[in-house]
Each structure stands twice: as C-alpha cells, then as structure tokens.
Length: 515
Image (cartoon, rainbow, N blue to C red; front, side, top):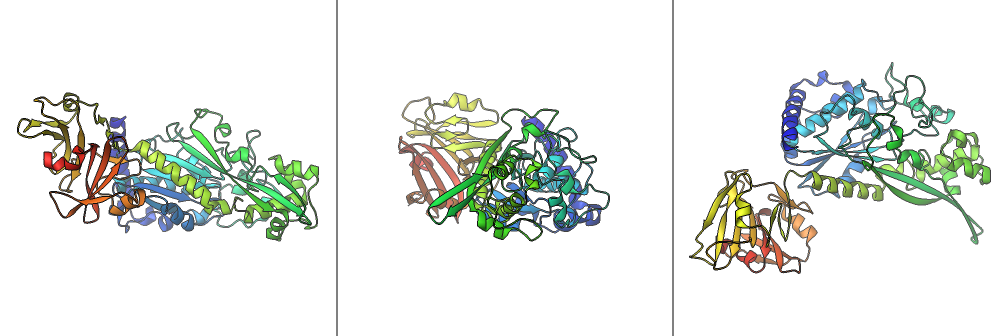
C-alpha cells in the first residue's frame, strides 16, 4: 500500500505542478476565478490535511460553513477551503463538465501542496455538491484519487433525487448561472432508484470503495399547538426538500458496481419547527393557504418521499418554508452547528486512520510498546540504527534512531535497570529540533506531534502540570499521566513541541538524564 501511495503521489505531484504552472486561462473560467490560484502561499498547506467545502444547486461559496469547520479542527493539522462553481450552479454535473474537471484539478493542486504520501484531501459537501464530488471521483473513469481523497461527507445530498426534481416547483425557482448545452439540474434532480432520470441526465456514479462516506441527513418534525393545551406533530422524514431515504441513499443509488457494505454510514440531525412559522417562511412563489392544517392524506403525502407531496398546496407551502427556515431544513443544514460538529469529528477520525505515521499514547509510539517491545525486536525494524551503549556506566540505556537521525533528531529507546542486556523498553522518546526530517511521523489521537503549537496541548489537556526541563531551561515539559504508571511528556520550546517522550514513571521524566 505504501508503494502504491508513493507511486500515486509522484503522479499527482507532477499533475498538480502542471496545474500550478499553467496560465489561469487554461482552466475552465469558473475554476480559474474561484478555485485555482498560482498566487497562493502553498507552503502553508505543507504536511496538512485539507477539507474542501462544496456548495450545491444554486449555491455560492460556503465561507461561513468553512469557517465553522475550521474552528473545530486543529490549525496545526488542517486547512479548510471552499470549492465554488457558482457560475454554473444550475447545471447538472456530468463526466465531461467544466465543474467536474475543475474539482479534479483543484484536488490535485491542494494534494501537491500538502506533500503528503497518503490521503490528505477530504470533501465536505452540501446538497448537489455531493453529486459533483461523486462524478469527480467516479470509480469507473479515474482511480488516481483513491490514494489522495481520504473521505467524503455529504450533507442533505439527494443521492436518489428529490420529490421536487423535474416538477413545476423546481422549475419555478430562478435558475441562476447555467451553461448553454448543459442539462438543467432542476430536471436531473428528479427521483430515481426506483425509476430512471429524465433523458440526458447521467446517474451519479459510484466512487472508490476505499473512500469512506458519511451521509449527514436533516429531519424536520412539523408541530402545531392548539390553544396551548394540545399539540400535534408530523415527522416529515425529510429536510423539506430531500427525503431521508435519499439523503442516506448512496448505496441504493448505484446499479454497478454495487458499493461495498459499510462504505457509507449515516447520521441524522433532527429538529422541530412550527407549522405556522413554516408557512410564514414560504416564498411567495410557493402556493398554499395559511389557514390549512394537514389532514391524514396530506401528512401521508408529505412523508412519502415521492412527488405526491407536490400535488397538495398546503404540503408544498409548509415543506418549502421548513426547508428555508427550520434549523435542520435543507438550506440551514449547510451551516447547522450539529452537522458541522459531526463532519469535523468524522474528518478527524478518518485523518487519524490515514496518517502516514504512528499513533502516540502513554503506552508507546506506533509499534513500539512500552513494557512489551524488546530491544532486539526494535533493532529488527526496517531503518533502525543504533545500539545499547553506556549500559554498565549508567542505570539506563539509550537506544538509537531511525533513518539519518541524530541525538536531537530521531527516535530514542531507553531500558531502565542494571542488567547487562536490555530487555523490554521503558521509554520511547521522539525528538526534533527541525534540523532534519528524519523523525518518524507520529501524533497523538488528538493530533499533537512534533511541531504542533503549545496551544493544542493546553486545549486538549487544560489541567496538565508543567515543569522546567532539567537539562534545558528554555524547554517546558507538560506531563500527562494515564493513571497506570505511565505518562506522556511534551517538551515545548518557543511555543512549539520539540520532543515527546512516553513510558514508565519515573524514568520518562528523566529521559535526557539517561541519554
């Protein structure tokens, strides 16, 4: 897998370099204007994960959503941006559209800037933006993104279409920014599976089974209170525009190849909204009598997930208003705090799984387990150099380091005790003064690694005690104990983590004294 990622990365860096070097007019107009840039400080993306936030039909850049998402991801590990196709946001995406080519080029450009050898790009999409992403990552036509894109979040995406698609209601809405010769999205957003899309509309394709999907769905329950003593409610099973079975319908929206079980998971954001408030929020172009409350027939139509709902003026009015104003309605879901939090949590989980390195815990760093891994086992690891030294002279032994490390840039192993041959390791120390790149990439579950800002430690471990380093007064040690006789020590100099030691107490607190 590593070799596959390395070869793929060489290809994507070359492709991204070509994009960066090409004049802006070589890309689709909308792409050059809104997404690709030769003037960006691309060094700011080096080594980071990138979340691209993509809007939907008739949408514009989701700047607020991107800011909210960025506020929940550690800046030392993540960069968040927006992808826009607002100049053609009324077009249905197909394999040859400029929008799709633009997204592909943008992904390559960001991936090249990160310099990562594993998945580093994550897409967070709203509504039809999820369809744009699916076409761009089409499994049947392009596998180069398998090792680049680490996950796809779809928020209220109509994977199986919408009851409003290809109806009078969708056609009545202003069709902004369409391209001559393209299929209009309001037609192609029609329901399918069951059924087929209108002629000329391409079905959304499957993406690589190695790219996980989180489908976040909005579900509005409409309520009405009678003279403050009675209450009725109807769960619309939708966000007012896209029904739940479509929002969570990726696997059932594809014929061949059938997506693998478990690739797509779902999460539901629920809210309640008043019938009267929904009617008040309904735009003038949606028909409806504000005096109406639903009867059983209308309620059933609203919950059906079919175009039957569009036959009833009251249903059209209240669903339209809820989609605009309810906290989990179709429009507000683009910046619903709960939806953004769930997206951020999933991105962090995917990124940890895709990390090109080892996870750091109080029990070890990556495959090196305190109290378990022996010196001989560590020495057998690929790239390990070093030997047990000063064993008889001191009460502990310093090990070696990986690659071209030195005493201050690399990985050290220590085993405490008076024996002449070290057994299981007691302390693992990862350090770097950034004079080389030899240290094995590693980070804690919270994303703290070498080079992380001190603020990340304070945020994750607000009560961690600090002590001056015994050998270097300029360094402050943060000590986090796990209650089982082991601890993590983060050494911070000038506001940046320069070393991390994990292992048995008290040996881990005097690691440099043993070296």
